[in-house]
Image (cartoon, rainbow, N blue to C red; front, top):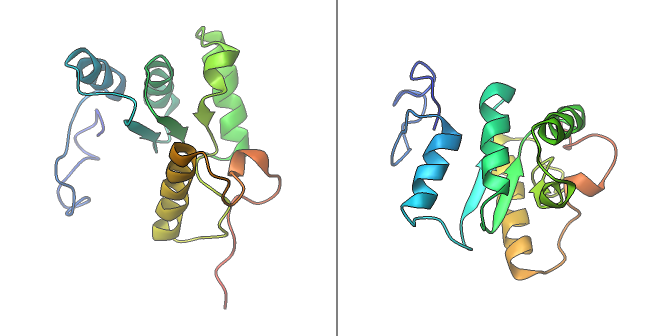
Length: 147
């Protein structure tokens, strides 16, 4: 999903079941109002534009969903938190935000990144300890590719 149709093309995402050109926060509200979100819903914000990402995260944190995560560096995360607080998001709501998103599995490829995110989702859903969430660690976010 992206509000910019130039970025959301079948060529870029050939395996996607569906491409949605819409503002993510508005679409999320519509899905909630239609009753299509619940305690099993997982929301992962993987963008890089605060104008799009902040309203999405703010909206997601106001809903009774299973998981809300946001991609970004530690610096991006701290800047996002500052902006969300300025928008009126509460510190209690922010505790539900998984950011940086994923578990510290040491991966470096897109597939390994996706695995680290889904591993965090599963660990959160089951309440089981797994690898350490990136949000609780310091240092580099991901491992390097072995030679």
